[in-house]
Length: 138
Image 1 (cartoon, helix red, strand yellow):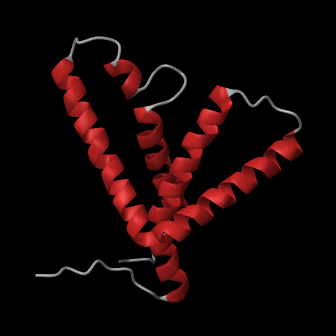
Image 2: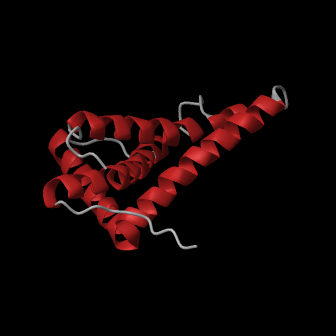
Image 3: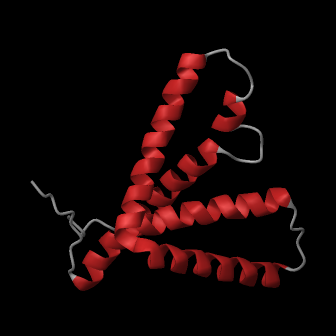
């Protein structure tokens, strides 16, 4: 793992990938994969192919995040995200918390967990020199 080229741009890129994957599956705007699938049976093979691609991307994100952060790390990222959300809502003043706003914040929290899972090994290697590897057993 070459950590010399890892900077803030890499974290932003991983965050954008996570946001695109999560909001591509569902978002409350009505333009998501789930809305497209339930709109009818036209383009069924394309819907299946796009669904398989989204599933593969989310499976890779989840597997990477789970193996790097573990259960406790995922919980810590969620707690941090909830605390940051509550602090932001306190500073921004009264906001409405309806189902749409809560679902968007929930989706952003999932993307934040994925971003942390994708970025943590690189940051850990850069700061501490520790390399995360997967053991291959034969």
